[in-house]
Length: 511
Image 1 (cartoon, one colour):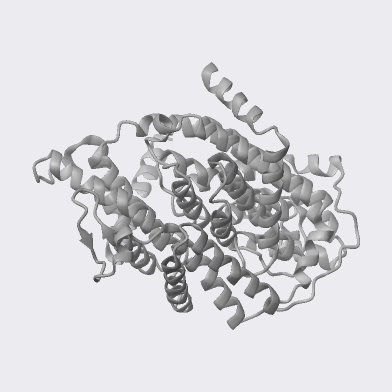
Image 2 (tube, rainbow, N blue to C red; image 1 turned 30 degrees about the vertical axis):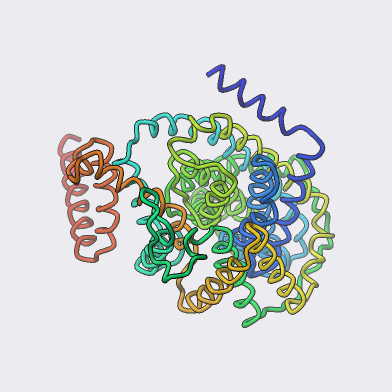
C-alpha cells in the first residue's frame, strides 16, 4: 500500500515540468476542437494523434492521447448545448436539457456548471483507476497461454456490443480484424500467410495505417458526403459558475461519477451508457422531474458527469486485462501497443510504474478541461465557423502524412487508402470500425496463445476448458454469444423470472 502511494507520488512529480504540461494542454486542446466539430470524435482524435506522437517518449505520447480522449468527450457537449448536435455519441444525453437552457439564454451557466461537474467526476474516476487497476492486474498475473487465448477471444466477442445495435455486424468486423492480424509472417516459423505473393505484406498490416484509414479517411469521406452546417447560439452570460450552485448538485455529481465508473468497467458498454444511466438515475430521484428535457441543470449535470467518469472506468479493464470497453479506449489500447506498452495481465511486471503514470495523466487531463472549459470556451467555439470543405482536406493530409511517417513506407499509405475507402462503404451499411481495430490488436495474442497452449498440451484442447480461470472465461464467452440467440435469451429470461417469482413467494410466506 505504502509502496503504491510512493509510486503514485513519483508519477505526479514526473509530470510536473513545463514541457510535459504543454503536451497535456496541447492534447486537450486538439481533443476539445475535435469534439466540438460535429461528426468528428474522440476515436478519430486518438487515431490521428497517435501518428503525430510516434517520435515522442512513451509517457509523453500517451499523455497527449489521454488528454485528447478526455478533451474530445468534454468538447462534444459544447455543440450539444449550443447546436443541439452531440459532438460525440456520449454527448447525446446532454442535448435535451443543454439546448433548452441555451434557448433560455443560460448557455454560459449550463456550460460552466457542467464543466465543474465533469472535472469532479473525472477525479472520482481517477481515484477508482488508482485503486482497482493494480488489484485487477494482480489477479490477472495468474494467466497462462490457455487463459490468454480465452481473454483475447472474449475481447473479440465483446466487439459485438462495443458500438452499434447489431452484434452480428460487430462480430463480423472483429473477425475481419482477426483475419487481417494473421497477414504476414507467423510468429513461430516465419512462414508467410495471406500475403498473395506481395513482399510488402510479409511484415503484416501495421496498426497506424489501419487506424488512420478506418477512422480518419473514412470520417473525411463520410463528412464530405453529408456535410452539416448549423448556426450556433451565442454565449451571452458568464461561463464561470458560482461555488454555491456547484455545491447544490454535489450528490448528483457523486452518484453520476460512481455510475459512470461502474458502466466503464463493463466491456462493451460505451460512454453514452454512463451518461444515459446517470441521467435516468438523476430523474428518478429528482423532485423536479417535470423539468427534465426542458432545461434541467440537474439532468445536464448528470449526463455530463456520467460520461466523463466512464473514461477512467474504461481505462481500468484496458490496462489490467487488455479488454477495452468502448471505441476510443480500443484505439487508445492500440496506441499503447504502438508505443511499446502491452496492456494486459503482464503490464504490472513489464511496466509496473505505467499504471500510476496513467493515473497522473488522467488527473492532468481533468485539470486541462477545467481550464479550457472555464476560460477558453469562447475562442474554441470559433472553430465551428470553419467550413467542412476547408477542414476535411486538412484532416486527409494529416492522415496521409501520419500513415507514411510511422515507417516511411509508401505501401502504408496504400494500406491506409484501401482500409479507409473500405471502411467508408462499410460504415454506410452501419458496420462500425472499433471492432476491426480490436481484432487487429488482439489477433496476435490470440494466435500465439492458441499455438503455445497446443504445444504445451501436446495438441490437446482439454486444458483450454479444464483450468479454473480458462474455464470461467470460456463459460462467459460462450454465454455472451448465446445471449444474442433469441430462443436462448427467452429461455434465460423465463428461468430468471421464475426464480424471482419463487423467491418472492417464499419471502411472502415467511413474512
